[in-house]
Length: 394
Image 1 (cartoon, one colour):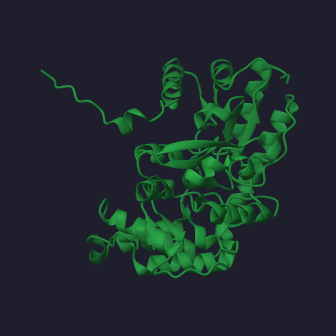
Image 2: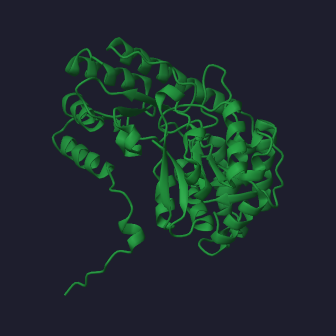
Image 3: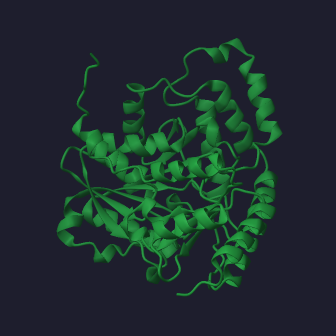
């Protein structure tokens, strides 16, 4: 007899996985022989640079790198991160106390909730947002209070609209700019408001800056830590995943407030044994180099963005070009929900887009498109949608 085991409450409380239905629909289409064009996955299709791969090969051959690494990261790696922050953002970081390595930034984003949230605590989470912000909080037993991100406010949270009694209870806030899924960017004025808000209510700011290097038309995204007082109230998560097309390599960092960085490192020392040192050396090769590769990569994404926006606008949308990320956040046409439009595009055109509800209640009425296929495939996808759905109305 096979035994039945009851899941822990923390796992039962996790929201349903919307993308399971998408995967089922995709499997059915592929089995029917449909040529699927996927604009739904935010995973770079461009390769990791050769010089980074060569560094991994070299370091992987060294026996000294085969032993247990430090759970907080080699000091050389943490110094490389600190030096990159100084060059890129003008932010001074102590590599000993203000930088901790992560097995990809997703790991740290999930674990920071375990460091500071107790069952029943309140955490401020944007909606729509990367699901790990709420997922990690729920696993820690906390209760997310969702802050709507709306088009009329440039998809920035209205901090002054958060009820005072909620703000007083809140222990943490998660934010992410440049933003997934909306592509929105944050201003210096907003970050200053955020620092003041955090100080007023004693709230830890956890800022996810994963897309800071994917930017277009001369725009340079800010780091939250550039703002005076930011290090007093928070930390920033980042990685080489999007910057150097290294999503599968799983290496990132958290930087900022030394007490928070130290606490996260202490938790990690009880949960994992750090990242393979050869991978740390490879990431350093990217961080220590020039930004020529990043510029070339952004040019590719910008060209794809322009093709996508032109194609959608030709069908009746009226979209502006996002300044950053490789995502475009698109309102669904009249007569559709996020889910029904996704299904219609897949069924009629063989094109995958991500329904906005995968990122929260406020995502209803939107879908996300990722620029992670070639320009030619994007053009083909736009033509298929136009041919099979026709002009759209709003």
